Length: 153
Image (tube, rainbow, N blue to C red; front, side, top):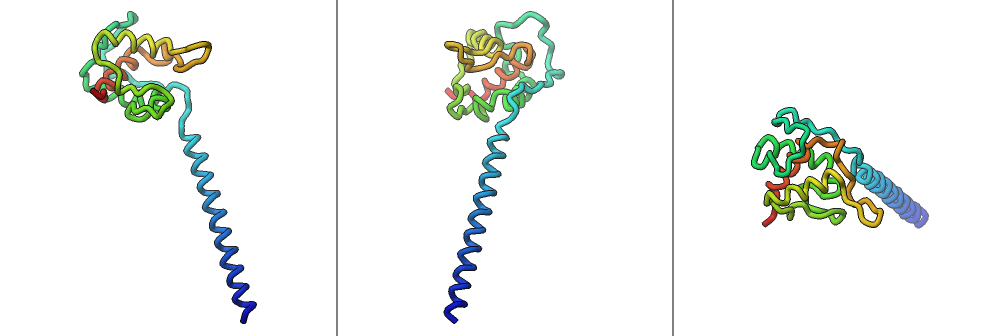
């Protein structure tokens, strides 16, 4: 009778150990999946075909301010190209600035455009890659139009 109790205890202990190992394995697999889900850092194409074309000359002021179609496109474009560093909803997770604090005033449009076009580097370290040649002017201004809708005062 005593040996049966010991065997049951050992079986229970073995089952518990197997369940813990399985749970750990699943947890590690999910964690690896989440790390990989951070996304491909290659800029994603943005369909701006429903927006008015801006031509070759770069605008100094956002021509899409308060344009609902540009805001819709900018929301998607931001999530595809900017959120991995600036956070979903532009709420920074600490990697890059919180863009909800970006000023809306027209004089800051040029600052925004220079950053997104040419990127940001300091002492040889790239803090933000340049997006000129990867995103169109229309896509950049659509992103700015969307950012203006999530700005915190």
